[in-house]
Each structure stands twice: as structure tokens, then as C-alpha cells.
Image (cartoon, rainbow, N blue to C red; front, top):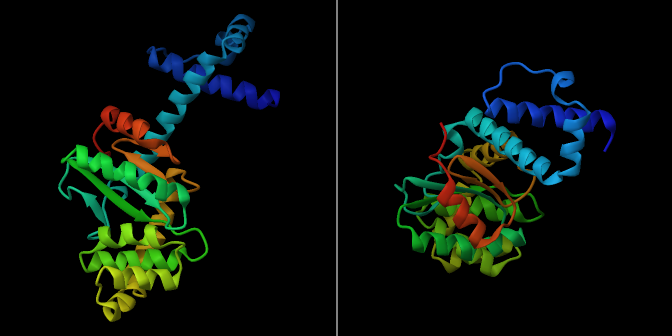
Length: 236
């Protein structure tokens, strides 16, 4: 790591720690003397903990800036309890293998907690994914989002043909679904999801908002369960 970058990182981490301690204004020269820097470099776990705390603080700041729109679902694109007070938001792509692997974990979390609301945000990034994402939102408009969501992962890979097959399998009004999938309402929703993902710092799927915090990638049932138990209420 370049010296200038390392010093900047140490400065930020030290400022964070002393901010937690209620310190007033400190300068680099007053804090990061040779002994302090030596201690931190000899005890990297301290740096790791400080960096994790800094990342969490920055994530919460980004989430607070975005506010309530991040938690507001496209009508019908919800799993679990639509009125639940515990909120889990997932940015998902039907051609994302990690999103598919996360589905059983999400289903298990919902089964274990009747107060859990899972908001699905379609974020199609791979070839063929947009057709499936559009059909998923069209399914939501017919009250069959969950059925389509599960069927689409089973039928994959996602493309225009498998999206239609999933729609037929769950009994969608296909003519209406095709019209809805191509509508401005769906186009605006997808654009909003990409903007939200960018604002929150997600560069792939799955990306999660767990109450008042952000989680990147496939983390498994245990980590998600722990995050939900520790999470505060949704921000905004």
C-alpha cells in the first residue's frame, strides 16, 4: 500500500476511534506518533476492527442519504409479511448463481419469522436477465411475484424464452404480462434500482439492506440471521 494512502487510512481510522471516545479536534501529528503507528501495524486486528467500523459508519451514512425509497417495494414485489416491521431488502438478478443460492436462506428466514418483510429489487446485470426482471415485475402487477421468482430460478438460465415459460407455468395472463413488462412503469423501476444500487455502493448481486445496515454478496443463512438480529430499524 502506498505510504500516502496508508497514512490517509490511518488518519481516518484514528479519527473514527477518537470520535467514539468523545475526543475534540486532533491532528495527525498529535496522534499518530511513531509509537501509535507501530502499535497499530504490529496489531493489525485493531486496524481490521477499526476499518470494519468505518465501513459500517459510511454504509449507514449512504443509507440515511437514500432514505425510505430504498425500502419501498415495487407493488407486489415482496416476500414474507408485507406489513412486517423487520425489513430485508435484496438486490437480485435471475442469472446470478449467488442470488439463486440465497433463495433457500431467505425462504427459511421468512418461515422462522412471521414479522419479516423481504423487499425484492430487480437489478438485471447479465445477458438475458432484463427480460426476466421485466416479467417478474409484470408478475408482481398480477399478484404472482413470489411464484414467478421461484419458478424463474428453477427454469434458468434467464432469457426471454424462459421468462415466458415461467410466466406460463404460474398462470399469468401472458398478453397483459408482455404489455406490463414493456411499460414505462417497469422501465422506471429498473432505472431506480440501478440508481439506488449505485448510491449504496453495490457493484454486484446479491446486495442486501438489513434494517439499518448493508451487506454485500452471498453470506449464507447464519450470517444473514445474525445481521437481522443485530440490525436496527430501517433508516428514513
